Length: 255
Ligand SMILES: Nc1nc2c(ncn2[C@@H]2O[C@H](COP(=O)(O)OP(=O)(O)OP(=O)(O)O)[C@@H](O)[C@H]2O)c(=O)[nH]1
Ligand SMILES: [Mg+2]
Image (cartoon, rainbow, N blue to C red):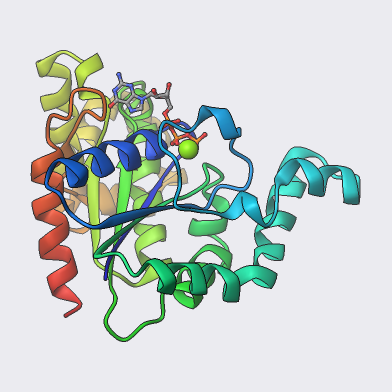
């Protein structure tokens, strides 16, 4: 079983990309399943019907009421409580045993970047000897393009996710149908050569460089921080073939 875990910041397009990948696999007549691991998503807002749904076991809105928590605290508590249903989720995956499993994850990146919760859940429900796992990390162009600083934060976040999972990772730039070609190329270029970000924001950074010495080292060693992103549109399907072939390479890395 080849498993793709779709991660990225809130609203970056995880759910839309999950759907786009499923459309691609459907067209290729592949045997696939979708697991929704977002306990907070509104049921009628999903563009796909999940074959396995964490919300069949636990929902953020119920935990808010039961423990009198706000949305963020309730979300963290809900993800911790998912631990009670790992056996059931694992069994559902085994029952389906699809060739491809796409896992849509929640927007609150904290559970995947800074806490063990996300990676432990994925590990426990997919710990079959024959499974091949890869992470997809989405760069949202509307975060990356606003300011060089946000692109840097996203590059660092991508690396935190990589360290958390310790699995092959594929980096994607979504929503390219909403951008000019020059904007797409600029984001791809800056992500791959972050020292150019430094040049772009030199006036500010040079005045405050003493507060970010580590960052200035990282930016000037672009082979450390730089990442090659695969540009895709989940709406037009552009780039999905390229993403899939990168996923095949990533899965083969764990073989
Ligand atoms: N035009 C366009 N819109 C997109 C694309 N990907 C996502 N969107 C839109 O961006 C918004 C957020 O997309 P989602 O897929 O819900 O993002 P998400 O990362 O799952 O969001 P959360 O689960 O809330 O973190 C939706 O309105 C999508 O339709 C894309 O490639 N092109
Ligand atoms: Mg989503």
